[in-house]
Length: 289
Image 1: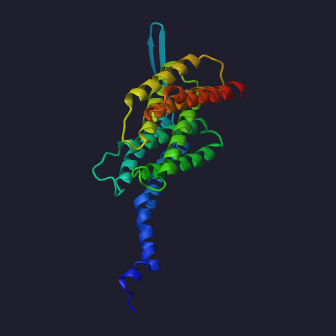
Image 2: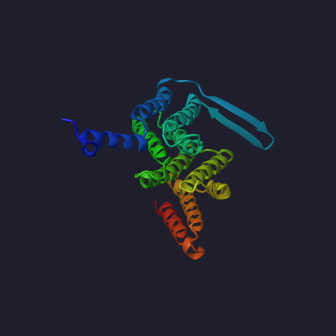
Image 3: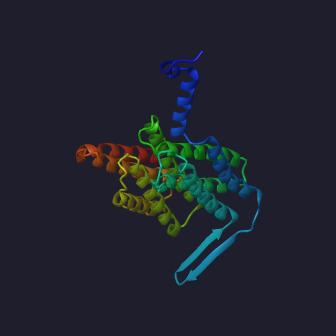
């Protein structure tokens, strides 16, 4: 029997097709996500399997000695970040809502994620805990790929959830990075630029997630400078790595929240309440840990 059009519209198969089309619009291709994740993880796996000698670049000047060790892990981490950047562009170009729009805003955080994952994996290379970090890194990569794809369309039903997830992930990445730098004993001339660049990029991406397509470079640069100065001041303090990480993540979170409050035209007295509480909690945990 041939159903009339009004009845056909509510046929189970038709509703299923509509549901699949909606999912296709809001979610990335599982095949592409899987292929991209596997390709990035393969670079980290090769770092553990292939042993290579360490090369140290040195520069000696009067009153100054520069030494920077380079290993296979260094090159593989850079390769993983580059592969992630190209792969995310390939992934997001598949979104029906992209069109001719630039995808650079969706490349920043995944690339930074791949770069940051390499730091703890390098520290755990000789430990059985490396597999825990490897699996955790895989989960982070899949999560950031999915969330970035969803945020392409601000009207997506799960946009608010994806935005919150990206924000939390960004702060977690900063905490992991600065903690790893502290564990490795990075020297000041490497620590300060790393904090400035990563803090600036993270705050820039978080501020851009407000849905207004606004790039707040002055705030991002200012936040990066403040975090770098705090990092330089705390560099010689006898702090544990997690204490050092919390002491820097707190100001990053607080200053980014302050910028968002002021952008929403919240009076200054009210706008500073949440950032002050955030800094107090972060530094309080850092002191008593």
